[in-house]
Image 1 (cartoon, helix red, strand yellow):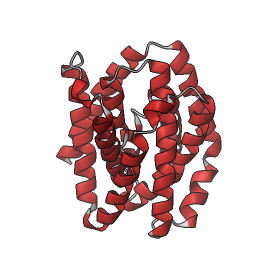
Image 2 (cartoon, rainbow, N blue to C red):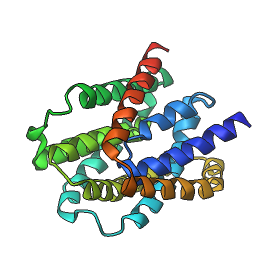
Image 3 (cartoon, one colour):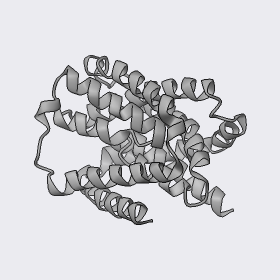
Image 4 (tube, rainbow, N blue to C red):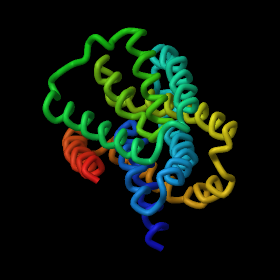
Length: 240
């Protein structure tokens, strides 16, 4: 029962994250699942859960994304997914936990201590390919592809609505790449897909809450709180 409640919470969290904050809270998902599940099972379950959330997010922000911004990101994401699955056998659960912790800490510290700092050197096509490739790698290995893309979108100064919409379609496309790769390597059991589908109603709930947050609550204050929580979570994972 505790495991089911935990998965349910993660499903709602993913829905909120995707539709309110461009997936910024997604780094919580795998560490939370790893409280009750082995790392390999947690990562396998996350992929169908993310795809369900992607479908709902794209529907909520249909055609609000920036096509010109999206095109340079696709090749890098595809390359990152391929690289990740080529080295996946070299990564053990301890390394996965360490990578998640470092992503949480670095991302949080950047926003807390250097929130006025702009990453203007990323504002070009090379920056788009590099950051989307990094996102593809981290997303495939630890389902934490949000930070690289969020950093990139912040560097080019996107408006909040275009930020969330473009991130939604980008991650939807990248997770399709990941799904093809996972099925090809036999890393996604059918039972895992069925488990994810059983939580679809909660994914709808998370998406609905996220859209409401996106349109009615001050996101700056909310993200500030989440940054401190990310720092605490990353520190806890690193120490553990």
